[in-house]
Length: 343
Image (cartoon, rainbow, N blue to C red; front, side):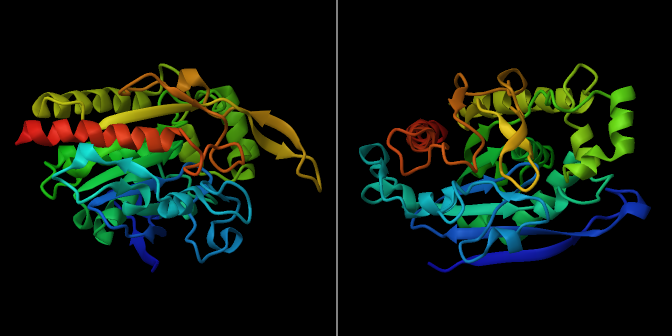
């Protein structure tokens, strides 16, 4: 299948960033498969992650220090690639009259966003809202949402906060182009909705970590890390969560249905942070987003995923009874009710 990559350099204007910090960054919108239906799945990676086209090598394509977030193991197909090739049936009779025949997983368009250059290296004033605005602008320019009637977003870690920001901004602007209306489901996988225990609160420890360059050591943007500290003083995350809850309530009340459905999953295994010299043996490991920090407004109780997405134990769409396929099926069944009620 043909692969189209929409690549553009986006200049962050002075209104979004201080004049001295204005610079161009690249956001790449990737199409793994266009699919055969009017439904698309959009993958959004997290902090320190990357999304890689099928014909590219992660080492060359990703920003320095970032990893392919959705590749199960080096040399194997990525999660989006597996989904794009999976012919298992998602829905049959439930969609009669709306879609011809049965709907297979690979009938869905499979897309992704790579913004790894915005989360690595030196970008001290590039906050999560700035990041979300930049990604949203490039998604709009790619015409992805105009090509499908319904979109399901699969977001990992920071990608979940970006997703919330984007949907909220579309709502604030009146959703004249119908982007928000097209989103029928959201997967929030290991999203730090309440922050992360690994990020120190503002104060002496934060100051010390900043001065010794810990953010640069782990190759993440300093301001983005600061936005993720857990605690009552993080007014950004508190405000985001409150607005997210109101947004879902408002949409559902208007449609008198449960759409858009929101599926949440928490990480349960530690991620290696520091390896031994000249070895892949981890010296320091930590769960980046514990269950308590992943709490957010969901359609059901959180599920547990074995680990972070780019490791072998991640349950891929080729496994039976996995979270992604079962939840997709549930989303489409609920969407029938949503469509009937609106009519």
